[in-house]
Image 1 (cartoon, rainbow, N blue to C red):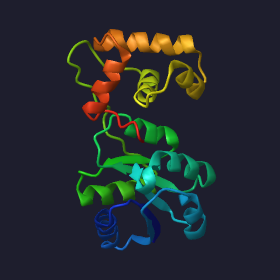
Image 2 (image 1 turned 90 degrees about the vertical axis):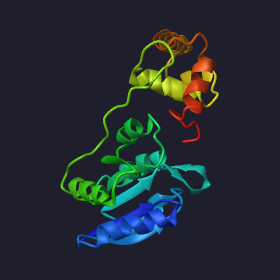
Image 3 (image 1 turned 180 degrees about the vertical axis):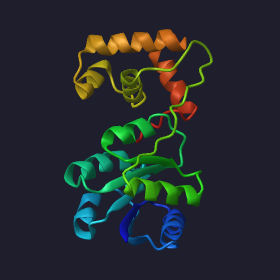
Image 4 (image 1 turned 180 degrees about the horizontal axis):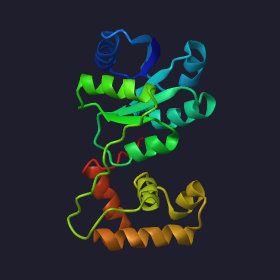
Length: 205
């Protein structure tokens, strides 16, 4: 029987996942946490085989950052990242952080069970990449351009983005120029506002 830890600040979601997994007898829930803060300590204590990790957890703690920490400390633990937001960067960032699957919470409980069993068998599950609908110009952006854009949405300067990504400020300017050319915007701040206001990027997580 596989041991499962659920990290989500909505009790109803934790209960639903627990019901979906435990009813068939292959999984047992060993703990639930509302926040991803110091979740590695609970992994060390509970030794789960599988962690369901929400992106946005209590206290504004990022589940993606926590996933990266767990993957580094406990590579044997499988991690499924989930979100109720249709944010375009979550799935690729979850994959990069070491997660084995990404699920939108709008999926059925049967799908949650299907992904959980598949992940424990060594499979991975990720949604198809989304195309950003732009009022003008074309997408998609490259992975690096999306990284720059996400940091831009957090109101970071070129210098701060360069330091965060370990690239030069000129490279940041090059990516911003490419993004504007592809999307049709004339100012990076307008592009950032469009992405945030339409829910494509959540700068908090």
